[in-house]
Length: 235
Image 1 (cartoon, rainbow, N blue to C red):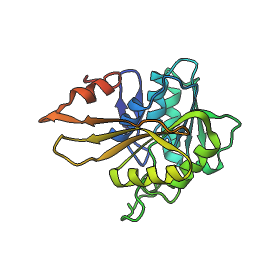
Image 2 (cartoon, rainbow, N blue to C red; image 1 turned 180 degrees about the horizontal axis):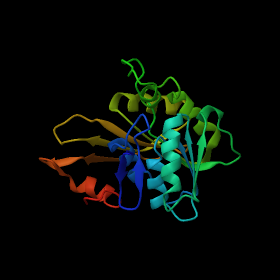
Image 3 (cartoon, one colour; image 1 turned 90 degrees about the vertical axis):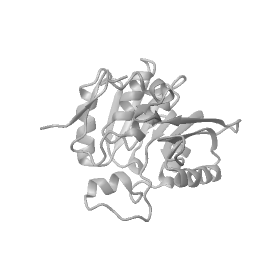
């Protein structure tokens, strides 16, 4: 029986994909700034959840290209997008991002990229593709950004703390400046678990912020609920 994660306006099948719907993808899909977006590129779309969230939030004229290399994740994403209200605006491509070619330029690029580089690898190949950097390195993401991001465009990523700092440094060497940097913690007394990062070609003051998952006990924080209220059924 197929396994679905239900949001307010769409559902995501994720039983075939190596990575299920999780907090990272939801955070990025809710946080990325779509206010001025016209063409969006989602690198490693997985189940398609981020592309679907961005389609819900963006103007009806916005188109999204979602790229996924894994066969089973692609199957999930294809089904999820086809069943969504935005199936005519999201174009899914079954290929490696390194081989993805299009004359289009994008004013918003998003990715929840693999980040494990030297850790123990899971036995399931799908899980390895989704979580480890062999098939999608940080350099790959930045190379795509170099050739496909418009002069005023933005790159948005979510990464763990240490990998986020590494990515900021690599992006700087490519001429990309961090313009937004938010930290995510499960609780106020916990260390930073994720960075939500936005990059652009123009150096500006960095907008900094923080999101907590829980305020007290198992209660979601007001900030997290505000960010995700258009998606989660229980808000």
